[in-house]
Structure formats: structure tokens, C-alpha cells
Length: 361
Image 1: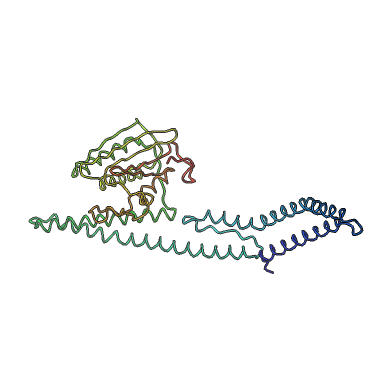
Image 2: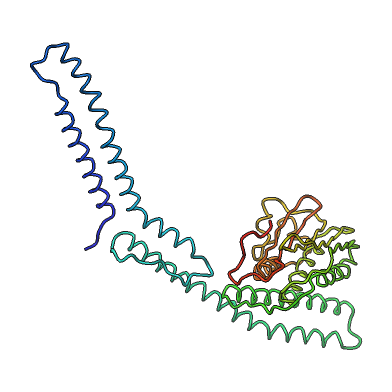
């Protein structure tokens, strides 16, 4: 038979109040003044009756209150347990299910409904991931064919200059599509827990120096000034290829959204068990209300839409993914004319449980 929590609480409180009324009646009867007493004695006895009844009722009502609190706490503790279990279910752990108590009450019914909903969400997310992976895979071949055809066209002698410029623009668009496809593939594999690192001993200071050199090349057209400040050699255990990709994404972002004649400053420093790489750049800055969103996929600041910067909105998402896979994270700060992106990484290889407690920022 299905048990009702509502009915249980109702019966418990009814019983408690009935007990409280019975105790009060008994105490009142015991303290009732005798009828054969004189008027002054009766008034005095009545006063003593109220005082006596109030004092003797304190302890029983306190006990009843404590019992009532315990019953309510005990009745609602399954709700607390259910809430705590549900808080640990997120996009990457939709395969988990909430435990059933086996009592058949409303909480078990609610748990079953939540588990069914989680199962449907898991199926939907899985289909989206599969579609994205399949679409990305199918797009690679035609994009490769397009690029190859454009390259062959550029190699033809006597090509019209106007047509040549048009083909170069088309190749840039194909390259942009390739970056979108690669980024989507990487992020989708990460969502499916298929993103892995190949760790090795990495000289982080060399990677930062390479990123600064890349910024000098990319910033030549807009006359960007690049500065490099290294605290010294820093050796960590990391995936060299992924860290290089991360730093190049930060560099591309710093160059693309800078102002002509602006600056980019790279700083490498250690602090206890952590190493921090800061990429500071000029530009308009990021509005405070948009700052928490810059690591969201496909996000582009409204200030830069339609300005010619052909970002796809995946670079910082991928950079944050790589940082978190290494046990660190990227933080951002921005004021007018200056934006700083700080990469925090542990000097020691972290446990595989994910982002550790105590990451700076």
C-alpha cells in the first residue's frame, strides 16, 4: 500500500496536539481551587492555579516541541538526501540515477519521475553529440576538396588578379569552417568524456616564448607591441600539443581584439604550488556583464560584432577545456583599454578527479 508523507505528518501532529491538550486538562484539574474556600482564598488559589499551570506546562510543551521537531526533521531528511543526490547530477553525469528508498511514498514517485527525466535528457544529449560528431566528420572531406581546388586554381599561370583575391577570400572562409569543425569535434568529444591528455615533461617558459613570437608575427599588420616577462624556467607535466593550442588561442584572441598600435604582454610567474601565465592586451575591454560569458561556446561580445574580426566564439571555450583537463583554469579581468586572461596550472600533476580545490582566482 502506498504510504503518504502528508498523511503521516498529519497523524503525528494530531497525536501530539491531542497529547498536549490532555496534559493541559489534567494539570488544570489538579490545580483547580476548592469550591468551599472563601473569596480571598479563591482569588489567591486562582492566581496560583495560573502560575502553577504555566510552570508545569513548560516542560511538557518543550518536550513535545522537541519531539515534533525531531519528527519533522526525520520526515524531511529523505527530501534533503534526494536534493543532495540530485545536485551531483550534471551534463557529464546524466548516466547516474537517484536511489529509490523502496517505501512507495511520494518521494519514491518523485525520484522515479526525476530518473525518467534524466534518462530522456541523457538520450537527447547523446543524440546531439552523435549528430555533431557525424556532421563534423562528413564536413571534413568536402572542405578538404574545396581547399585543394582553390589551391590548384591559385597555381594557374595568368590568373586574373581580382579572381585571385576572391579565391584567397574563399580559402579564408574554408579555413574558418575548418576551425569551427575541429573545435566542435574537440568540445563534443570532451562532453562525451573522450578527451584525453598525453602528458610529458614540458618547458612551459618555452611555450610562452613561442606564443609571444607568434603574437609578434600576427601583430605586424596592426603594429602591436609585444612584451615578455619570464620568472625563469618552469617545468610541468602536461600535454605539450594541447598547451600550445591553448596559448595560441589566447594569443589569437589578444591580437584579434586589440587596437592598432596596442600592446600584448606575456607574464610567467610561480606562486607556491601554482604557475600563472598572464596574457594582457589592449582594446576596448569587455563589458562587466559579458565577462562571465566569454568562455561560453559561440559567444562574441556585442561590441565586436560586425567589426570584421572573424572569430567563431570557440577559442576561449577550448582553452578553458584544456586548462581544466590539466587541473587548472583560466580567469579573466577587463577594464577599458586592458584585458587580462590568466592561465593557472598546478606545478605538480593533479589527481584525475578534475579541478582541485584551491585554484587561484
